[in-house]
Length: 391
Length: 140
Ligand SMILES: [Zn+2]
Image 1 (spheres, rainbow over the protein chains, first blue to last red):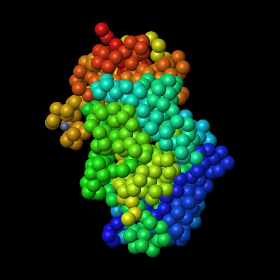
Image 2 (spheres, rainbow over the protein chains, first blue to last red):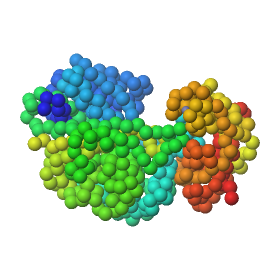
Image 3 (cartoon, each protein chain N blue to C red):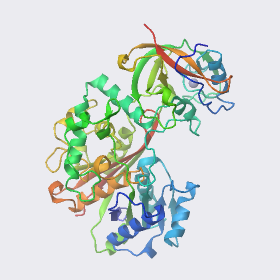
Image 4 (cartoon, protein in one colour):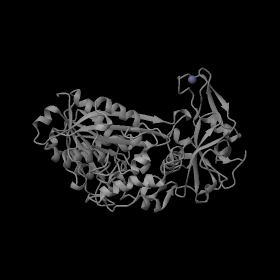
């Protein structure tokens, strides 16, 4: 028991467009929200993690800038890993170890940014970059979207997956979004609507892509001793897993992602099986992202993700595995182009029984939250968390 | 060097000592792979050591420059890319030597490409005459 680590506070910023705020301010607002949710004062924070803040140069200074701005004193453990969209899940996995090691007992993790207000060209960048590998990739002009489209096309080729099956993922998630007052795109769409939307890079259509939103989210992790002090019931983190997969000297199988290994690690640690999971928050930069995660996290056979989605399994509250009941990155929020932390927030809401009633899973006990960074085809970082409801 | 019709000289990739032989060979019309002298792994992209056993005993190995389309995707939207070069067909080509490489397909009608189509390498010049970029075009 004393080794357990809990999520005491979770908060998602309600805004999706923040033209009149700074990125720092968004971090502060979500930090305040998560601490209030936990019932802890800022003075209790002794661990802090945040990824780089793209608005500012020297993003490696992110945690220093932010600790200064927020007025955090006595931070004895800090983390600024930026492994992309799942960065804050990585921070959580690392914070679990730090808390278990006694390095800190109240960890604040923040995400915030304004890509929508800054009108960033997200996903279409294609010119030579700055890493060694970019010379062999970006120099060819391929973009984030074409890389995901190449994966979708290969999946269709090997397994007979159809564009309508990719569309079924957004259909389920958009059904959920209508019950989220904060969702950027709250209108339900059908799989056919997705296929009818503008082609971005065949077979990826406009509605296969996630939103670009301003905003943020934050969580507060605590030791079991701190959890015992609190008035609120806390969600336990029962398993964590991380994995990097890549090009592998030219042997990459683009249909197998790091979610397989990160998922296996998390399930091994948690000691539960796939069938125990009541709710899944899956990183959804594109519909094909969800499809591969469903397969690689072991919720269906390899190649069967399309059929699984089409069967209605992803729809709450009655589907076999409801996914992204907040509307996810596809319909609700992908703050700062790093939607990972919102996955945790919705999983916490499900386990506390605090989601919209129409999508609340009755007696949800176990949830999975999965984040990824980098991108398919080149190199990816996956982080998986398994969470258990308060009892 | 065979130059595809629709391509202007491209921005030059960053050439460092480790990868210079690859880019120089491309400018001479050769696609270079590397082979580990110890374990025999043939790999792409170039590295000064073997990514399997960390051996520094690796040798350049000219590729045949032929292969097949493993997957591909076409797009009209690429930031800062010359509009004359759009739509762009991104692809992963599986070389006959084994490695798969991310590249571009040229001299082709995007609607008529299919997975497993045979392709051959051609080279796009850059502003630096000693550096060229390998891309592929369909063959019969
Ligand atoms: Zn070797």
